[in-house]
Image (tube, rainbow, N blue to C red):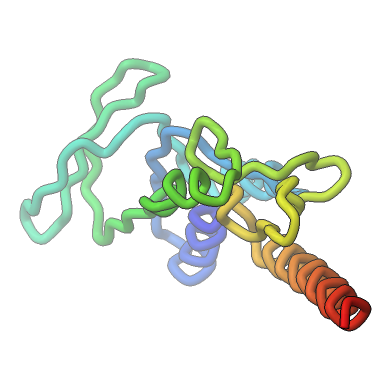
Length: 170
């Protein structure tokens, strides 16, 4: 999504510029994201190429990008004024170890998994442990903020219940 957004911003500033996006998979998970990407192709003439940019080198003041379109099997070479490498979102290196220590579950990609997404996207099934934001996978700012607020609220309720229990014991 961020790649599409910045590609469109570039096209609004450099009207005669051409944007090529090499991708392996596009994760457009939010409301309207798929449409936004489709509009970047139809309205902004941004070219999406499924595959990897395999080699970058300089030639005559241009950055040459060599790659392959894995859908068509064609080799591609593009002369570019600017190359931007957009890194994929990956879990923290210590996520699996932390999950094991806390008794949490991770998905096949290594992101933390909630107990039941339909009931609550932040509950882990472990009392007092909540997850939010990109530790679960790619999220936009609105989802991240909402989950962070929800997790903070749950923690406040949890800590208040502990304090009440201690007051009743004494």
